[in-house]
Length: 77
Image 1 (tube, one colour):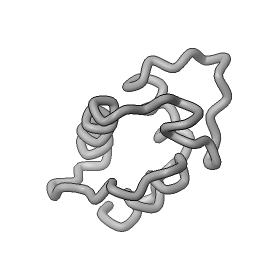
Image 2 (cartoon, rainbow, N blue to C red):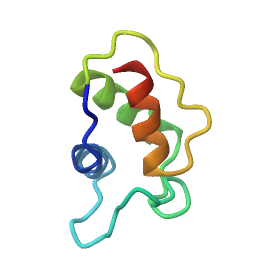
Image 3 (cartoon, rainbow, N blue to C red):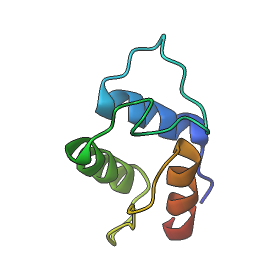
Image 4 (cartoon, helix red, strand yellow):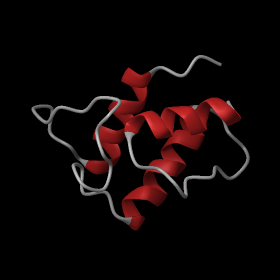
C-alpha cells in the first residue's frame, strides 16, 4: 500500500488539532514541535490504524518525526 505523507499530515492535524498555518513536513518533530503527549499518541495511532486498515498493534515506541510515522505504517500496510 502506498502511504501518502500528505494524508498522514492531515490525520495529524485532525487528531492533534493543529492549525493550518502551522507547517508540518516529514522532518517535523512530534513532541518538540507539535507538543504531542502520550494521550495524543494513542489517538493518533488509532486513527492511523483505521485509515490504513491495520489490524495489529503498531510499534510506535521510537517515533520522533512525521517521517518515522510513515516508515512504521509502511512496515504494516
